Image (cartoon, helix red, strand yellow):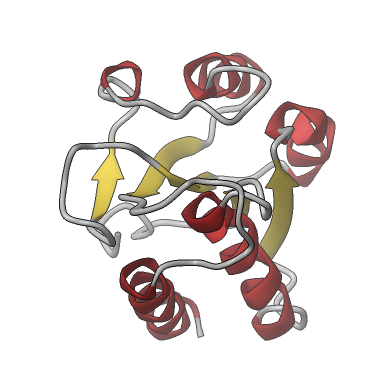
Length: 154
């Protein structure tokens, strides 16, 4: 992540997820928490894209970011809570199923309308059943990610 952010000018961080589906809420939860922390930083825009991240493409375009970071639960067949930087070429290999539009389409659209570098930070979910609770493994990963972003961006 440090290498990805090396020459950043303006960052858009978008959390994606369904707060009613357990660990799938991770992206939205992270966006909500980060928006409290980075409210004073004009070079960082935090967006909670929920289950419709495509609705925020206009907002992203207006921000003219140099870097876009997407945060989402990604089924990677890994241990719950596993965090992975997923390159755009790999996205189609993973199951990201709770969104109206495939994430690969969103990324292709953003690439066609922006020169920003784009990356997905995926977190392996444990439970995506209809529940409001995040698993302890994914909550631990959320805490780690928040600390990481504070260290990198403060």
